[in-house]
Amino acid sequence: MSTYQSYHQLYPYLPIEAAFFFSEVVNGQFGNRTVFDFCMYYAEKYKSREIPQPGPVSAICDILCQQGQLTLGHRRGLDNTDTSYISVIRDRENVVKNIPLQLVLNNRLSCLIYGFKYIYENYGKYVLPVEFTKQNDDIALGSCFMYKGGIATARHCIEGAKKIAIRGITQVQLETAKYQVHSNNAMDLIFIHFDESLTDFIYYGEKAEVLDEVIAMGYPRIPGYHNFLTAETATVSARFTASVGQIAAEAEDFWIKEQLFLITAKIKGGNSGGPIIKKNGTAAGVSVNLAHGDGDYDDLGYGTVIPVAFLDEMIVLDEKHYLDVGDIIFKDFE
Image 1 (cartoon, rainbow, N blue to C red):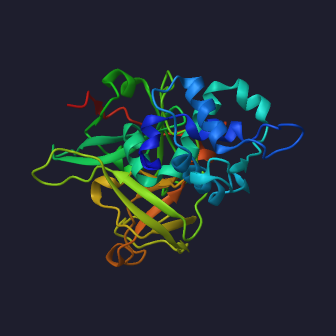
Image 2: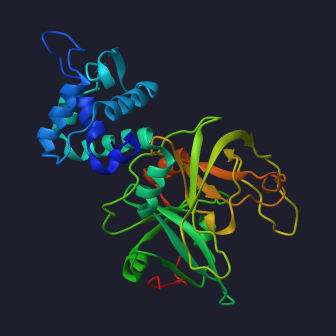
């Protein structure tokens, strides 16, 4: 018998279907539909070669209860066949009619059920390496991620480059794009707008709180290896507000005068610009380098993250600030 961990491959639409199924009112009340009823319903609707089993389905529903997405009605029957759940989907009628929204909600529920392994396997397509050729022709590697129709990354992964290439993005797309930066020049953040928005991307961002579990994804450059996607789970461990003062005369960077957060995973060189993802599949922030003079956080094993709120606010501004990229040569990623 399959365990519930394999159900994201066997029955990919099970999470959203369970949310819909257990939100139906039967005979004037919630909670009259059982796990066995759902298994038969799903197999019939999707013409499954195998019927989902009550045990794994009940385990999935129990996880959704723990995440506040379902409520247990009653627990009965061998292997939970007669167990029932209650789901109240907000604005259910509009969700039923909106297929793209259903897919987004199904993905979020799947992230909550199957965890960071699922996120790594399914979000890898959104996280891309950035090849940064320096003025002396040395090549460095950074990370970026597809977000809300464009690409988000750390500003230092683009600014000052002699050449830039991003895997999966063509030279023409990069040459015709606009490179939006924050009004605060010290904010290590950039968003790339394309003439035609990307069709596949992380849809939502969400605030992270202290002790939230997250996963950091990116492309650290490891000598002797081709670039490959790494992931490290972490906890949002603390917050800090950087000092406001100016750092002296040698033109060293000084950090932004805004609130950032730390995670219990180092941001290795090539990881900067990559996303920090919460357990529900939403982006929580952008990995960045810590500027000089702001504490030995990296020595303590922490990574520094710009909250996604800064990115979201920046994207929708009427008056946008753009980086001058006229001196950068864009090329296809090889």
